[in-house]
Length: 594
Image (cartoon, rainbow, N blue to C red; front, side, top):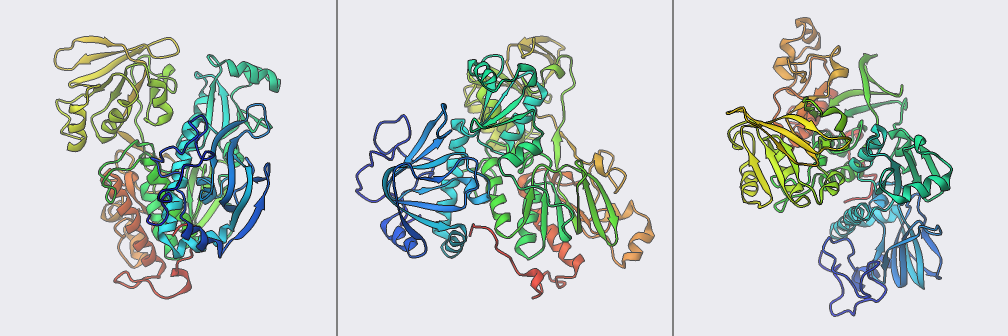
């Protein structure tokens, strides 16, 4: 990022510090607040529009789309949550050389803050088309903007900015809304109906009773009573499913690493590509606190950041991603495929890639079910970890997901127990995780151990574990239990449509052909392609595919590989895999990132 670092020898700006800090520039350890050099700013000024601003001028308003990229030339701009309301809160102040915006600027979400001029001066304004053009031609500048926007979104989430969810920790709908917000990395704050004094005041203010919760409140002007995930998505600007708008080339169902890799490769090669996801982009990988063995990231990367980068990359080439959209039925129609969704909408495409992945298997022991969501968890994100700062927790499982969760939670909880049924961690866990777990002072591994019961009134108080060698039972006083005991494929909606193996995973290639009627492939005049299912033109990749390697890198590879077969099927490639020169295969870069 040469040329975009803070000016050498520049004096700290008194108006460029984080709210609540001393009045000097704070260290930018996340790369979230780079200061553009004078040369960089002068170069950008040739493309944008300089504009004088006065104190109180609003540049970006909370709840409205971000459509302009602003750079502060003189004066200062404050980033404020709840601007003009009793709960107004200063988040940051930007001085000269800083630019305004976070992730919502890049993925066309609405703003989660208001940018208002604090000290009069001058700003530089660039349209989003101008920004896209600049970062396409200047990858260094593009990387600076991307890193800053990703870092700022993480900080917004950590600061509890954005909308508020008011509800009981024991309410399934409260848990549903919190999970949707957390998994989609949406800035928000949960206000506990039972313990937070602010909850009662807000209920009185809006004239609603506790029985009407959960509520979503934004900007003190918008109130939703127990909204669906789709209603919440529309409120904050996630793109809706565009149903019935012609027949695209490819529909990708699922947006984990496999689905996003397929989207990047398909859209970059000019295929009209739609991605649908039932809950949140990223799949199981998106909930991982840190992936240390991901190719190309020697210092590791969180699942959330990997997902955001992939989503932006797919959007760069014109792929449309819609959340939430739960697929309910797949059928062949007039030489195309129609996928119907739970809300009754429908999308039609020439080919389909199934990348629905798998969900962690629930633990079935006495006392578990009433505590699920409040104390029993099937993912370990910041959302769950923040509730474990003062209490011991336990993790069940012996694979990489369990290992990553243990190390992440050990950064929050004073003690983390890892409960493993087998005699060793070596069977299913990578060595790099085992080494870290064995060295961590807060982690205690209990081998030959399984949970036999959970106890607690509304929240977990203890789990009873049994030693599988001796039969001895004992209680562990923990306040949360994280379960990673294998996964089940998300294929219930496909059971009557294509061939599955005995565990419900999708058969592909030779196995799929063997499970099909011989005349099916004879009529195609070809054999079943490597990642193709028992329905010609439908492919399966990643965790949902029978026999796949359950790793991020493998899923990404399968997603990319599937597009080669899609091209072969559509007649857009030669036998060697080179694309032809038809307009369909030319990349269409419609989003911002280079």
